[in-house]
Length: 539
Ligand code: NOJ
Image (cartoon, rainbow, N blue to C red):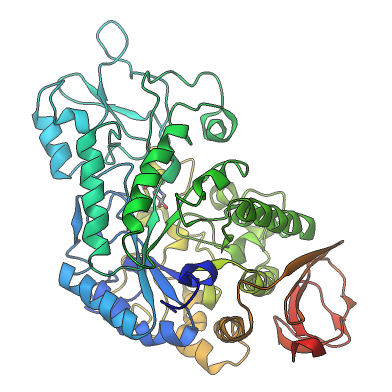
């Protein structure tokens, strides 16, 4: 709920919306802002405090909208700026804040600044807003350095006049030059543009990537995917000089009561707190749980370390199980722990997937993150237990990762399939035409309409958990973790306990009044099952 004594975001439940795939009001096959507005009652009933809307700006959608052509307007497929304003106002009526996605590392190659840069001469002010460089080799035919794009292939593309430009992602996403005062001023203004429209906050994309080493040195002979976590003074990742930018933004945010920033910062655990200092980001996603296999010791240590890191800077952790970039967690938890889910998408063996175990564990995992102090970010469809759609035909794959990696990485389309609202119809409740990404047959049984009717559904588990969380759990309580083999266990003030059996055999059922359980329980707590209990002192 926005407002109140403590900052609302310290203990919020935030629901992530991938606009294209959430709800399609005009029935053209692509989700839109009017669709989000029409589903606000659903979101309010679910019991969330805010929504984070993935990029909705004008964009050629080469990277799902993370290629922004106009930061101050919406893509016509999603709606208009008036639709955005109406959503922010309606959401507030429902007690829901709106977070928008800030994409400051790069624009689209269709952004007017980049179009102008291409039309301008080398060395011109228009080029200086991005990173244009001469190439190496006798004729400049080699890229300026050895940096690789996150999506595969070189991070440089050559243009007709021989210069190269930098893109840490797709070639349609040129990186801004954050040394340039014009870029800094432009983003100050973009921040204010959205803050003035009453947003509750911003999720900041590629937070550790903005600054580049002034000399653009080679990275050298090291796996570049791992280098960002391993190299000190990395030439483009998690550089110390990114922090003055964050402080600048924070001072703008501080002018707007209650507005917050949450950073997408895939950095080493010991570096994350730097982003959370009191004059920097309010929050940063805790991604270690996204990477954790279904294993009690790993969960226990990730939770403990996240607390220590957040406490050290006076912040609270920000829990995530899934988002639009990773294999959905019911599928991750259905795979053996030594399998890399992203590799498995392409290479299998797909018969290793145990969907039932995955779904059982997803129920239990949801009860962990919703019981922990701090914020929880839910990704649309988590509450329906949607699995990763790993068998999308190659012909429909849309993520640039697929082609850029030479078809060696399947990409993220399987977690971006449109939400099933109804069990029938060409788009399962999204309109008269098939959606932009096909929904598999199994989605019908997971539709909202079906789950609302089933008292034991994942949706009803989420609704109950969020209601209990809101009523009983506040971020100010004492939190204590117990360490026991195969079991994740922690207590919070007023006698609340969360106990999860991650082992393969049942454990004795702890005493206390059961508030909620993720599966059937009796004298024993079965494997892959979570329970919330309260003892008499909690009454
Ligand atoms: C992180 C976003 O979450 C992802 O979807 C996007 O592809 C990259 N940043 C580039 O903007």
